Amino acid sequence: MPKPVQFDVDNNAKRDRWKETAKQNYVDLVSSLSPSSEASSQGKHGVNEKVQGSKDIVVTSEDGIMKIVFNRPTKKNAITLQMYEEIMLALKNASTDNSAMTVFTGTGDYYCSGNDLNNLINATGEIQEVARKSAMALREFVSRFIDFPKPLVAVVNGPAIGIAVTLLGLFDAVYASEKATFLTPFTHLGQSPEACSSYTFPKIMGSAKAAEMLLFGKKLTAREAWAQGLVTEVFPESTFESEVWTRLKAYAKLPPNAMKVARELMRKHEKQKLHAVNAEETAVILERLTSEESSNALMNFMSRKAKL
Ligand code: COA
Image 1 (cartoon, helix red, strand yellow):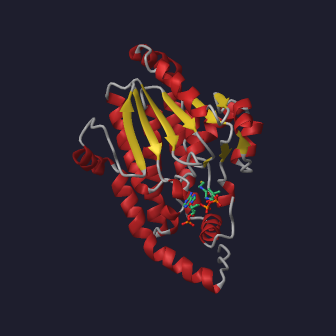
Image 2 (cartoon, rainbow, N blue to C red; image 1 turned 90 degrees about the vertical axis):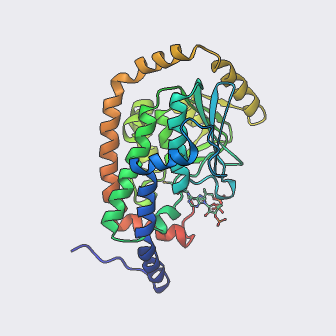
């Protein structure tokens, strides 16, 4: 029998509340991300509409660039369930519209602090079932990035955490401000790598460096991330925005079909592998989400004992 988790009285009460609300939030998560609800999202926003989304994800299209902005600065741009849904819809639209490339960036001092931990903390219900649905939804989200057909660029304006970092292994170019940092604290949270990072990170930076990030949660500076191949180029904070956007606007004028086919040639042999890794990672995440290590770490975040 596994050892029962020992909580203090205060944490026990919080844990009970957490269990009670868990089911509904995860059901909401899955229904918001499942293929069937995507149709209703399309109905809501319209296919290939210039998606405005909620205020937390802002999507604009200009100069051949579809720009997707994490716009929740008071929460360090942490990604809520609604934001996941809007990002998937924006990617779907971007894959068929006439933009040449898609660029992610963040508003305020952070690029993105990763998954909103309240998505998990507030989740209720049978833990096995909600974890299964959560893992399925994550797999679907990541597969949209694997299959995305156009150049995908990140303009990392500040610190990036968790899935905001792991996804970068699926991007074509990552431009970082010198004040950006890169942190994947999965083991601190009792969780495991996602977005194919268990495959892309060792491939990009070598297994010894990838292990420091994915096993030990070492935070990289922008220059370290550049030296390890995760970042394409680092810019001084003062000129970051102007230099990067000038460059991207020039790139977006290149013949879009030539860029698409070049990209496809670079990626086609990897796609099947990436989907297999995605499936494997989400199977492990399913186990992790139900683990004592994970629930203890989330309780710590909630009680604000553990800041990363
Ligand atoms: N999920 C939920 N809320 C988050 C968040 C996240 N990933 N990141 C930041 N926030 C919230 C904080 O709870 C806080 O909310 P509040 O003002 O209602 O209390 C607000 O954003 C500002 O963050 P705060 O912690 O006060 O700022 P900070 O500069 O001291 O620390 C972080 C910023 C990002 C280092 C810290 O919030 C943190 O560690 N967040 C968790 C990051 C994480 O583990 N992500 C998942 C990785 S798998």
